[in-house]
Image 1 (cartoon, rainbow over the protein chains, first blue to last red):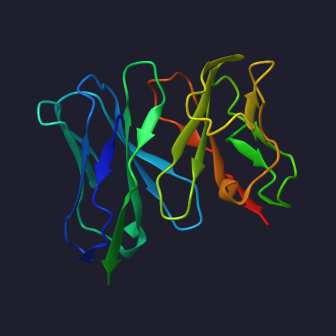
Image 2: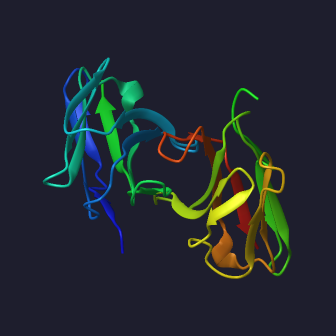
Length: 111
Length: 113
């Protein structure tokens, strides 16, 4: 059973702090990794993709991938109350197959 | 279209009724996916199309679930003889290819009573 594991949270951080969200996956052949943000009652929205080991930065977001350890993380710098949402990690089981999603981590940013 | 369009937005069905959920993907997106999301859970894969070909239907929970995409554009997910456990949000997503990120529609919230 291919799995994507996330801590369900809630993860609570004060406004302006760094939020760190983590995800582990079970299939060593996974090639594509994504982070989605889902506000309550809304559908998931793609915020980051990463395919190679290392860091990828986009604005306040940084995705980190370590294939040897089978984990991917998302850092949100200068967290804002508007970042409060559930963050879903998604991984392809193998190239050419549909994404498997984790259950999501709920982030709460307090002002 | 500009985004992925799903209809209806909400559907209430009596147990045993058949339902059909529609998805209109972004124009030109060859890959189309259906997911089921229960409250407090992540999306669970149901099935995947590349153009009109259904390449993976391993996530369909029973033979009451059927999906089609006959002309490689609009897709329909049909659930026959609905049961209470079918109550969930059904999400459709499309992408330019299977290894790209997906764009999700707003979903259809199905409630079986």
